Structures are given as C-alpha cells and as structure tokens.
Length: 570
Image 1: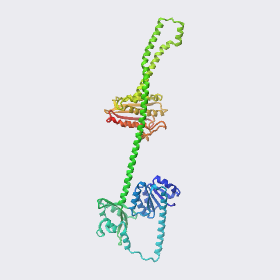
Image 2: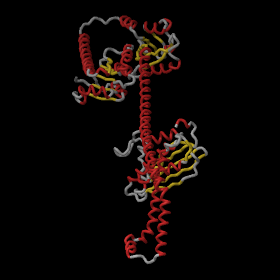
Image 3: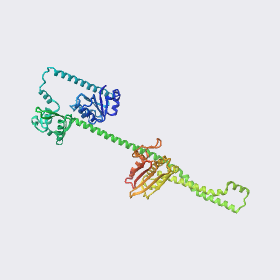
Image 4: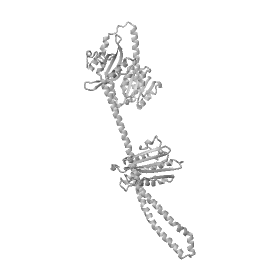
C-alpha cells in the first residue's frame, strides 16, 4: 500500500484500526492533519502531490472539502469516514452532489479492518486514473502530429452542455445574462429569450445579490481557482433553495471579458447535512444530560453513603451515651454521700484522739502502718477527683447526645454554640495532644431553625480537616483553630472556622466539594466529607465558601438563614 496519504481529523478508534497497515509505510508517506484548510491551500497551490485524502468522522463539512479537493485534482481519491449513526445521511449527501465522481467514496467507521481494504482500493484508483491520463495525453500528442480529421463542430459541445444536469450560464462583466443551457431555463423558470440581457442576480435573494457580484468579480479577475460558494434563491413554495455556484473567467470573440457560471441545486444535500448536524447536536445534548445525570447520581450516592454512615454512627453514639449515663449517674449521685460519710468517720477518729490521747501500742503501730494523717488529708482529695471525673463523664455523655440528637425532632430551633462545643469536646483527644489552641469568638446568635445532627456533622468534618492540616505541620510551633460566629442580618448568621495549617493549593480548591475527591493518602479519606457538607448547607438554604492561602491558612465560611423557608425539605 505504497502511496502518499493525508489523514484529516480521523478519530482515535479508527486510527487504531488503521495503525497496523499505516505503520508499514515509510513515515514520510503518511501525514496527520487537524485542520483541513492548510491542506486545501497546499493542494490549490500545487505544493503537494497526494494519492489519497482521508476525511475522518470529526470533519464538520466533508462534502464541501471533497468538492474543493476534486476541483483541484479529479484523479485524487477522497475517502470519507462517517459515524455509523450518520452513514446513511452522508451517502445521501454524496448522491446529491453531481460534481463528485467515483473518486469520492464514503465508508462507515464501524467497518473495522475493511477500512484498510478501502484505503488500498482508493490508492489503486488514483494511480490507475493518473496512468490513464498519461496514456491519453500521449495519444493526443501523437494524434496532433498526425493528419487527424478536423475537430467536431462547436454545436456538438453546445448540445452536451444543453443536456447536462447542471445549470450553465454565461454573463458579462455586469452579470448580464448572455446565454444559458436548458437546465438553467427549466430550473429558474424563464426562457432563454426572456432571460437574455437581464441581470442574473434577479433570481437570488436581494440580501445576497451583492455577494454574488463580488464573487463573480473575484473569480473573473484572478488566476486563482476559487472554491464554490452557496447562495439562496426563492422557491415556488415560499421556501428557499440552495445553489452551489462555481465561476470561471471567459473571453468573447471580440476580447470582451465575462464569466461562466455553473450551478447545481444542493437543497436536498444541504438539508441532509443540516439533519446530520442536528442529530449530532441532539446526541451532544443527550450526552451532556447523561453526564449531568451521572454527576447527580454520584452526589446522591455519596449522600446516601454518608447519611447511612452518620445514621449508624449516631445510633451507636446514642447507645453508648445511654449505657454510660446510667453507671456514671450512679457514681456521680453517690459521691456526695460518700464524702459526707467519710467526713463523719474522720470526725469520729479525731474525737477518739482527743478523748483518748494515750493509745495502746497495737493501735499506735496500726496508725503508723496506714499513715493515718496522710490518709485523712488525701482521702477527701481523692473523692473530689472522682467527682470531677464523674462530671467529665456526664459532660461527655451530654455532648454525645447533643451531637447525635436522635432523641429530638429532626428540625428544630437550636443554639449552634452547643453543637460546636460538643464537637470540640468529642475531638479533644485529637486537639490536646497536638498542642492546638482553640480560640472561640462567639457572637450573640439567635436560635437557628435547622437539623442539629446534620449541622454537627458539618462542624465535625470541617474541624476534623483543620486538625488533619495542622497535624501535617510537624515543625510549626504554634497551631491554632479559630471559630468566629456572628449575626450578619436579622435573617442571616455566619460561622467562620479558620486554621493556620498548610492551606489548599489553588489548582485543586475548586474541586474540594466534588464527590470522592480527596487529598489524603489512600485509606485515610473517602472524598465525601466536604461534598456532604456542601449538600447539607445547600439543603439548609445556606452557602459555604472556602478561602485558602497555601502554606498559611484556610478559612471556611458558612452562612445560614435563621429560619427555613421550606423546612420540610431538610
């Protein structure tokens, strides 16, 4: 398959099929183009010599490009590769193009390996036609040197033009009709006698007449071959028909200039191409809708996963809090009595020492063994420590219950500060060992109508991310999380959570709310936390924004309405 081939906008899948055969060719015999215009300009200027031009399924106007190629070199084969969904329309478009011969063929990209055979056949056709042309030129040269019979009369050529299935019109420099063939007479609905001496532009839309004259003048005054242009004329049914017009300069017997116009009706082809474009647009729109549906499905999946996880976590937390609350309440409730009983016993011992200062040797030995003075001094402190521990357990249980909120209505008016404090208490085992300072600058907030369990989940994710960021800063001497709350209007409040950690790179900050996007190592992050936060705040009719300076800080700002306009949607 030795031949010079140019592949224009061929899709990657088809290139893969053709690669095996193309790889056998020398590298200089195969070229790949993304823009057909430079190729067409090189062909028209005679700068390159090709055997096959392959127009891929990504080319937007393959028929027009094929016509331009054929207008330069009729022997050059053009192979159009069409998408299987539009293959039939493309074949119809070619059928309505009489300027295109059998050197232009259309094959579906679904034909697979058969495309290689089609490419080989195209190269063979080009070489055969060029060989025939060379033989014909040699024969003509031989006949010109021999005593050949006189040429056929001009009337023979006129009869051929008169029977041609295309319109042929000769005009002068002012676009006045000099003559035309039968097809033009029948198509334009005017006899030749009536048309002679009239302006050819009368048949075209008024808005396009000047463009037609300019096109005729360009073609008549230049040696460059111009590609056909498309113009519109009025049809009998009040619609438009499309004409493809080609212009070539001619000279009269007296040396006056003029132009030969060749036109063909391409309305059906134009409609086929428009149908193909419309189908492509519909498919692209459908693909966009499917992409959006997939994105919504991912968001919904992420919400379901996180909701189920948080529901299970909330039930577990509530269960643990309930189980701990009973023994903790028992301990806390009896410590006071234990302190009173112990104080009574100590008072009794002191009274014995006062009434009976002279004890027996056995009693004195026992006092020394148990270190009675230290015991009397330390035992109340021990009970106080137990009481503080019990209070700590009670506060932790209360925070767990506030965080889970499973014993309350889903939507209610709550104090956001309680939810933030509960979250900080739960995360204290991560905050304290890292030496993180928490600064709380609480404003005077009204009660907020919301789902407290969901907002606590938001605070848990954001503060947890801040802790993760600060944990990465091993050499940072001062680590800080600042929480600011304020009322920004009678109907809006704002919560800002800021850390002085490593920050977020600017190239990924726009992705942090995407489901399954995470910057954490594998196994440490699901990529759902911030996506769920965004969804929760969105459902609360609020807004969440992230501002970050890489290497300095990250600020998460949450704006929430005081009351929900449609609370039952939460």
